[in-house]
Length: 199
Image (tube, rainbow, N blue to C red; front, side):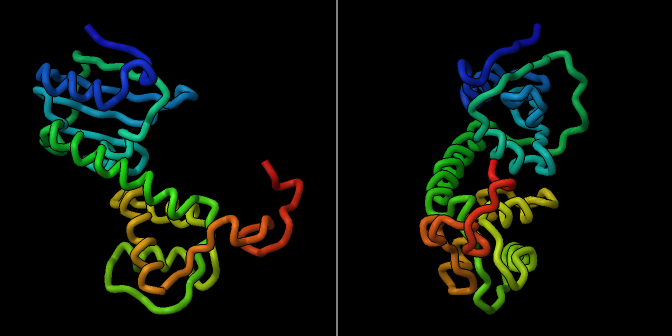
């Protein structure tokens, strides 16, 4: 028998813990508040054997989905599972996932999505930082744009992208200008926003 519900009433960490402790096997499909599929988790004997969320897979997908606070879920114990991609204990994933989620919230406060990232000069030996700099280019982009650009490819998540950006800022390779520092105009140009582009 399957289980359906609301993530507002039964949060994903609790649901995963129930699945783990109960040694359940099945597919858990997660839906966002607009009823679109946000991701899929697959369990065998209470262990995570597969996860997908957008382009992310395995642990990265699991960690990304832990941030889902609203929406619904559908656990189907009779679903035919694909071949195991991973075989991970959910308890340690939950602990690490919650730590990463807390750290991501702290990084979001320091590096909010509307803040502007400007390239100052230099490079990096770190592959993710190099990719971030390549996406940024010689101009400026918002933190949100940079993070979205880094996420393409599925081998990095928001946590990884924000950490890389934080390291680049600390090293003086980029400068991050928070929204208040752009004097209320268009954060990239400094001009007042265009009314037709406002949301």
